[in-house]
Every structure is written in C-alpha cells, then in structure tokens.
Length: 148
Image (tube, rainbow, N blue to C red; front, side, top):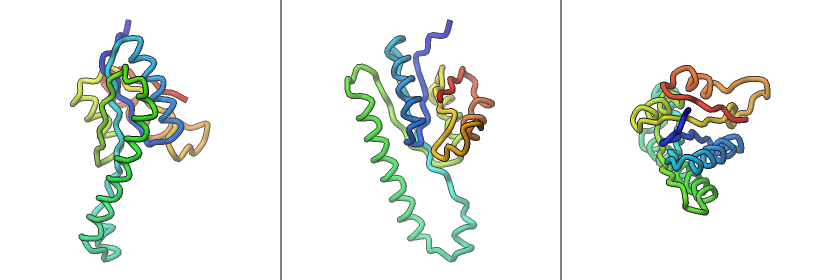
C-alpha cells in the first residue's frame, strides 16, 4: 500500500489547483507527509525579443515582475491552506517548460506521490485532460493522483 512521505503539488493558482492542494494536504495529514508546492513560470523563447526589438532591460524587468507576482500568489495560496500549520509545506518557483520542471522537481526531491489537477487555468474543456497533467502522468516515476 502506498504511504507517501513527500507529495508534490503543481499549481497554476486556479481553483483546480486549489482542490489538488486540498486533497494533497488531506493525504499528508493521514500519512504525516511533507507537501511540496511548485509553480512553473513558462519560459519564453528569446526569438520573441528579436522579432519585436524589445530591449533586454525591459525583458529582465518583466521577468522580475512576473516572478514577484508568482511569489506573491504562492504566498497567498500557502497561507490559505496552511492555517493549522500542522503540515510541512515547502514552496518553489521554477522557470521552464511546466511538465519538464515538475518532473525535475519530482526527481530532485525524491517525491513519492504527485497530486495534480486534471485541468489547469485554461480549463479548455471539461472533456480533455490538460496537457501538463497528461505529460506529467506519462513521465512521472512515482504514482500520480489526478484531481477534478
């Protein structure tokens, strides 16, 4: 039987992610596990800068602002779900391709369960599995729990 000790929860700060985090916390309480909350900022190709002649300084300023906003949202989500402080929740923000960074985090932290929302912020259709969730499911070395 699976008894997770380290649970990874990718978040895009959507309601879907909130539900996944809530379920992960319930599981963590039951097994006295740690929760690792991760958000990935999508990396934009450098060619966009060349195409629009955007200065590097402006791009750096935008990247810093995006990171600051992500950090603020992460802190709010952490505070919302860790009111009892009975579960250890670690947070991390990475930059790159979402599913690749999630899988790297799985390996880096020796995660034994990933709890991920089946749909993300786009919520494109209630009938489709999100591309990030699908790629994490295909590439993960540990069990993956998909939430609605």
